[in-house]
Length: 340
Image (cartoon, rainbow, N blue to C red; front, side, top):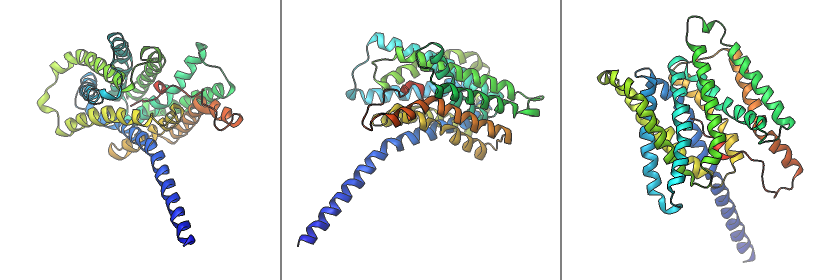
């Protein structure tokens, strides 16, 4: 009798542990969905800019995505505090920089260079530029791990561009890659400024307002190109990609991202963000048949390692000295992630 009770108790404990493990994995699965969506955005956007001006492509993606996010914010309004007029204005200003400014460079770069380059340059250089700027502004400590990581990341970027070699002759690839660098710089500026602009605002509401305002600005900028575009010649596959970009990498990705951040620290989300180049490279090579040289691959790995070390290296070393239950006060802000 006692043996049966012990077996039942053991089975119950095993079931509880399994359920707890499953619940702990859910936030990471949410973030994984986000990273896959972000990675797919590069190849999908490349297809769109092949058939329409880059400004029009950006307006369609974030005009539709902003509308969907606003709908989601309304549906989930009972879970958060209402957003005031001043907060809405701040979120809108952040959107003008992070949505309008960034995507002008993002889609422009895609019209000149392979999506494979953008999927590597933008997600990896953005945290490097963000960390470097914060150190120069003395808003973060210039620890040896940060400085070493930034130096390695910069070296990786140089190797990546040197790997272009003869491909730059008679092509626009180098120009497009430099535009991607400008886009990474714009996202870095947004990551820094948005900390003060959207402070105290519900993340989903802030994203909805920011994306809506930024998307509206993109629509205004796209009017000249839209007027000259022969809409009847746009293939059905391009329209399918437009719908996918608005729903998947924009609305759904951000929704899963903020669901994941409810239970996962921003530093963990930052680490997972470095998987975006992996997914982006996969979609670009499989669906668009794009490729890069062996030297570029080396540069990518060096740049990725340097970026990872610069962003979270100091956190790892501090955790080795701190108690296991000590709060993580050195984690990057959630606004330093989310490139797609």
